[in-house]
Image 1 (spheres, rainbow, N blue to C red):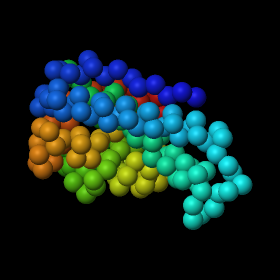
Image 2: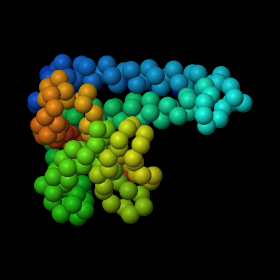
Image 3: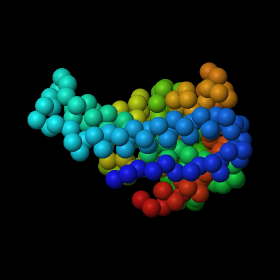
Image 4: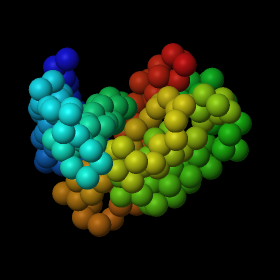
Length: 194
């Protein structure tokens, strides 16, 4: 399968507090993950499976990096998809679920900011298929930290590349800008499709 980058240029100039320069740099990084994913999948077709082992082997290394490139590609797509400069709000069903799990929308925002501050990687709002509840989970890398049986509903990129141009080391200000730009219509649709 050939993975193709989606065009998120409609976000340029439309987000509050996140500049075109920041987004353009971030788009290039996302394109790099998609390119690397295609390269890995192409090399896996011909990699020598007989020479694989835990220590080293072309196939071994490609398999170890496959999830990094895959998640790097598709988490970025989710991230850009759940951004918009337009006003939106959680659906009644999602708002009720957030309130049931976190106590209030304000508590959820506090939890998002705290969890995002705790990781250099990703924060995902997920629907847990085991306990049938929403969770904020953090990932230290694109492929490390997410428990199984999760369906992502919202993706927040916490890597420095997502905010350094605009915010320097002021990650808390970036988190506020991210939350101000959430496209709840996209998040509502993801939640509604569970």
